[in-house]
Length: 377
Ligand SMILES: *Cc1c(COP(=O)(O)O)cnc(C)c1O
Image (tube, rainbow, N blue to C red; front, side, top):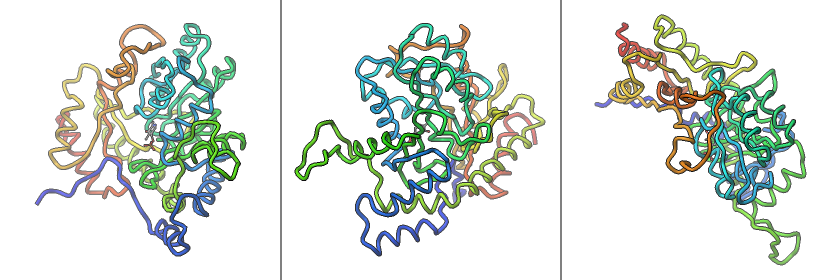
């Protein structure tokens, strides 16, 4: 029999989710909107301290509405972190913006404030900046926000991977003009699919709710003055979210324990470095990642293959956007010339299995397979 599969990061349900979903069924509140949607928004607002939030069908939808609400129009320049998942930047393309990619710094793997400053020298008038907290590690978000403020440019903070991570005690997703969360299947909490757009200004969030429900003017007949979207979260999905939110801190503690276990298990192998933590932050460690020292003969592919042979899922680091064929025409700004930090992380790194349902035996197996690649017992 094949070994049971060990996942990178799969949904972990607790039963509370079913209670809220059952309530929705019992009251026949299955259709979009309803009490779970309102309550999920309120509960997330309370948890994250993010001001106001609109529950949407995905994190990508939240990013798209943030792009629209930032006023991004055809040909406008948008700065975006290069080292990220494509969903961070695709919505800017829906609005036909011109993306300029910004390199990462090695301290947190996120947008380099030095490169961001250089980008402003080259392109003084972008319309928005998209920064990410990759793998749950808080970016140098105070510096990034200060640079954006100085230039009067809106900051879209993609916290899709970092819900519950804090920077200087403040939740990620609350530093930008817009914060984005995702509840996709493999995120730290999941609603099967869903997202949230957060902002301090209630009028902005009300506008987001309006756009996400087909932009119907307040008239009895169906009248529309702007283009709308079908981006609202359903009452069933929001019920799952309410149940998951009750267990978010528990998920975070388990993710952090996984990271610590890997770090300790590889401490005697100088060729392995775990993904860096921001000393000013408390990361949710959504995914634990490692890099292999330059010059070492072991490759990320070799480790991923060895894990896959035992039915264990792992994943390469996100391929930077400036290296993607679809973005070949976009400019890319780095702090210093030469091989970019993001490309270097991509070349030498991989994401280790970070599923909170991993047993002690699962973790031992993963660790022993990785150690074996470096000739260690
Ligand atoms: C998952 C993710 C998204 C997209 O969220 P969806 O809910 O899947 O649309 C956006 N940005 C980053 C960095 C992500 O990891």
